[in-house]
Image (cartoon, rainbow over all chains, first blue to last red; front, side):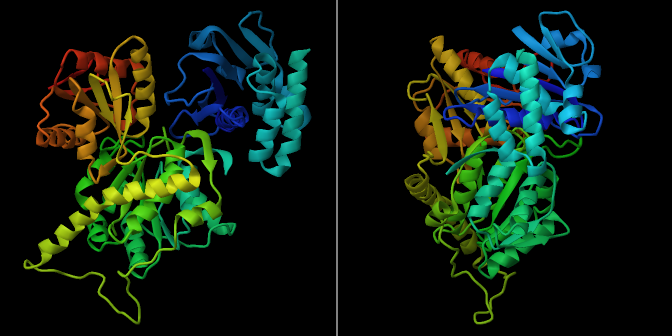
Amino acid sequence: MTEILWHGRGGQGAFTVARLLGEAYSLKDGAYALAFPSFGPERRGAPMRAFTKLDRKPIGNRSEVKKADFSIFLDDTLFSGQALEELKDGGKILLNTKKKIHSPTVITVDADSIAEQYLGLPITNTVLLGVLAAVSGVVSVNDIKEAITLSMPQRLREKNIAAVKAAYEEVKE
Amino acid sequence: MAKKFLSGNEAFAYGVRFARPQVISAYPITPQTIVVEKLSEFVENGSLKAEFIHVESEHSALSCAMGASSVGARAFTATSSQGLLYMAECLPYAAGGRFPIVMMNANRSTALPWNIYGDQRDSLSQLDSGWIQAYAENAQEALDLALMSFYIAEHKNVSTPFMANLDGFVLTHTYEVVDVPTQEQADKFLPPFKTENKMSFEEPKNLGFSAGPDNNIIFKYKEHLGLLKAKAVIKEAETHFESIFGRQYTGLTESYRTEDADYLLITLGSISGLVREVVDRLREEGRKVGLLRLRYLRPFPDEEITAAVRKAKAVAVLEKDISFGNEGTVYTNVNSALHKAGINIPSSDYIGGLGGKNISDEEIEQIFTDLAQQRTGVHFIGIGGGQSGS
């Protein structure tokens, strides 16, 4: 099972992207996913988490992800060294930041700039989904494109697909 | 059929839409709100033609559904927790009036302390209200149960209201893959609601009728028979369902690796998925363990339980419920069935997940370990200092 832990602040779309990833992955036959936020009251700006679990068989464990294969930060103010404790062996952190961090475990990307360019807003959730596709291969850009087409309002589709592609290509290079 | 990525609430709302209810009475409460929100969208976009009635309380929500049902309309409502308790006065009214209303209940803890998260004390406190009670494990079953609930409730041998329970948040708010059927398939499965128990201008009747000491017990006996007869109708509904949708359900219970199991865990609702994974893991280690999932609590699956438990060496119940001063209500019911069948093996009760507390795979494994040691009694999981109880 591949487990993804999303960190964001209320309003940054962490749960939306957790759900998009689950949908993109489970479009294929024999693929299963669970996606859910940390349950409870949600407030704009408050730290929150969301979870995606991906597997080739039905997933029985509905508990929160304790150790992730990928821990993804939409906001670098939420990131600290503690994040490493929530990773499986060989797990990776994907971090939206303008800073450089020299660690084999932490992959940084300036997702704000990509989001500004393609969406006109610093909403980086789909950008980081593109980064995850490039780093992990758990989903393809095409799967993401299909999930976006199925579940996002029309006015957001094309620019988000463009943002995913741009992020994917920047990291692949 | 189309695959969709839906939450339990959304999946249930799709099932209700396909059942074409004519009246939906709605009063929101977390974590149920999304089901009535989604249905209001369906009514707004025209994909469901129903009267969507905003009522002022849960008491009114069920009263409204009763009024609709009494004139022959297919009626749906939904609630949770304090909302269910607030409508509690109306529950036996609906059952005694034999109104086949379907209600979704999002299982949630009851105050105090105030808590919005999932446990099953709300619905289990209403087991004696005369309603059928079913518990879904996942979003697919939620959708399928929504469709089947109308079939079962409205069957002329049953004519009893149906409460479909979904664990709050872990099921109602978790997204997963669901096969969504077509309206054509649903129409083939579920005919329009027809009943002789109907009031009209041509045939005026009394909605709030009374029955004195002489014949009150006859009404109650017939109500009891309606629930008992639901057992056969549930099987009939599932066979019919499978012929159209291809998905199989197993009646009042679902057995998992129970045939040769020495140690059996009985539970209900969405925790069953995790128990199944633990059973698989322990089986690989050579431990003969199994799971019996209770899909229905009313009518009670006494025969299914005794058949599954007959060869076991010990049995435990895991439930998100406590009848204060006694034990978990599911445990009481299970023990009664075992006693009547003359099965005398060690049994124990594990109370967990109250107020939404996580139940881990390690905790479930510990129950199986306790079972092998023939531990008995009532035990609370996750209260610190290990599992303890009476």
